[in-house]
Image (cartoon, rainbow, N blue to C red; front, side, top):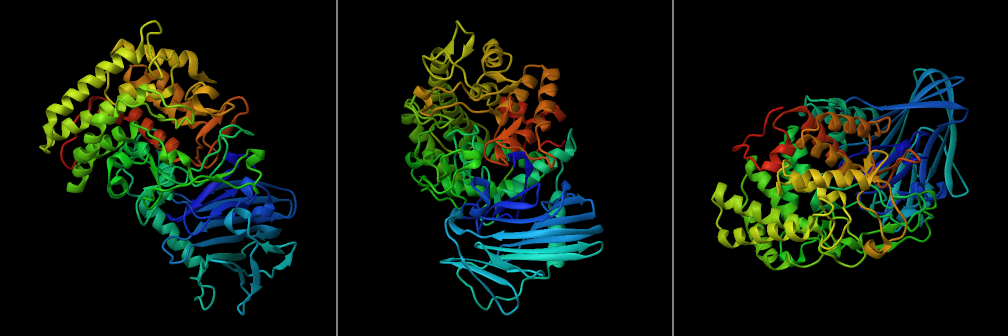
Length: 606
C-alpha cells in the first residue's frame, strides 16, 4: 500500500495504521515507542499484521465516524456489502483494539489472518487456545489475547479463518494487550459498549473545538489527529506514530519519529489555544517544563513521551524497509545534537503561555533563566541546525535567529510581566545577535538571507524570520528571501527544506518537498500582503490530504505520493495554523511576528 492508503486509529497511548484493504500493518503496544507487534508496514505480512478482507473482488471506501478516530471501511463485492469498524478503546486499563464486521447487504465471504510478531517482527510467539476459546500469544514479556467469534486455526505460524457475514449480522473481534500477566484476566468489556463509549468520548472532545473558519472539517480532523498522537499520561505529542517511512522511496533518510520535538512546541500551543483546547495546551506546556528541567547545557532537542533523554539509535536488519527503503531505525541519534534553535522555541512557547493566561509556574521561569544564562555563552557556537544534518556543524542563520528570539522573549517577560532577570545583559545579547545575523547571514548580491554564514544557499527555515518577529515582513530583505526561496526551493509549487548535499548534511540522495515548510510559505505570503498566492498554495496543500484527511511529512510531486512518517503532527499543526491565519485578521502569524499581547486569560476569538 502507498502511505496515503493508510488511516490512523489510536487511544492516546498508542496508535495503529489500517490499510484500505482492511489490514492493520503497524501497531506498537502498549505505548507509541514500544516494539511493534504488527510491522508489515516496514516489511512483509510475515513481520506481523491483522487482515480482515473479502475473499472476492471488491471496492473499498472509508471514513471516520463523525468527530472521532473510529474508522469505518466499507467493502462492496458482487454478492453484498459489509463494513469493518476499527476502534482502539479509550480508557481501558489494558490497551484494546476492537474490529467489528457488520453485514449491510447480501452476504460477503471474508478471510481473517492474524500474524503476531513481537519486537518489530522478530519474535514468533507461542499461541494457544484458552478455555473460553480465545487465543493467547506469548513471547517473553509480551502477550496478546484475541477474543474471536470465528474458529481460527494455525497454519505457517499464522492464525487464519474464513467466515461469512450477512445483512444485519455483527461480529466483534477483540485484541487485548496482556503484557506480563497472562492468566486469570477478566473478560473484556462488551465490544459494542466499548465502541459506543469510545465514540462518545471522541465526539465530546470534538465539541470543544471553537474553530469556525475556512476548511473547518479538515482543521477538526487535524486536531483529532494531534489528540490521537498525544500520550495521555504526560501530555507529550509524538511527531508521528511510525518509524522509518522514507523521505525518498528506496533511500536512507528513514528516521524514528515516535518522540516529542521541542521545536514543535510554539506551533502546537498556537494550534491548541486558538481552537479552544486550553486543557491540552496546559498539559503540553507541563510536559515541556518537566522534560527540559535540569542543566541547560544538557537540553535535548527531542525527548521520549515521558520525558526520556536517552533515545539510542540502532538498526533492525531483519526488516527490509518500506518498499525496500533501508535501514529501518529505532531510536534517534539526533537527540544528542546541539541545535540552538530549540532554546528560542522553548522561550517563545512559554512566553505564549504567559500571554494567553496559562497558570504561572515558578519552575517555568527558573528553567528559562537558566537557559538564557547558558545561551549567553553558547549562541556563538556552530550547531547541527533545525534539519538535524549529520554533516559538520555550521553557523546556521536560523539557529542564530532563534537565539535572538530566546533573549527577546526573556526581555519581554521582564518588561511585560515583571519577572526578575538581568535584562540589560539580555538586551545587549539580543542587539549583538541581530547585528551579526544581518551582517553575516545576509547576502546583498542575492538580496536574501542564506542558510549559514558564508553560504550562498537558502533553506526553508529562513521563512521563520518574519514569523518570529526578527524583521517585519515589510523589510525588503524578507521579500528578497522569500523570492530566493521561490526561485531555488520550489518543486511542483511546493517547498523543499534545502538542496541536499552529502558534504553538508552527511547523507546521500534527495528527498521530497516538506509540507510544513510549504504552509510556512502560505503564512509568509499573508504577511507580505499576497493573499491570493496564500490561498492558492493552501488549496494545493490541503489537496494532498488522503481520503480521510491525513498528511505525512513530505510529498513527491513527480510520483504524486506522500513520503515520510505518517501521519505527521508537524504537517497537521501547520495546516491548522495556516487555516487560522487565512480565516481572521488577528491571526497567529501576525500575533507571533509582532509579539502582541493577547491579555491575561484571553485568546483572540475566531
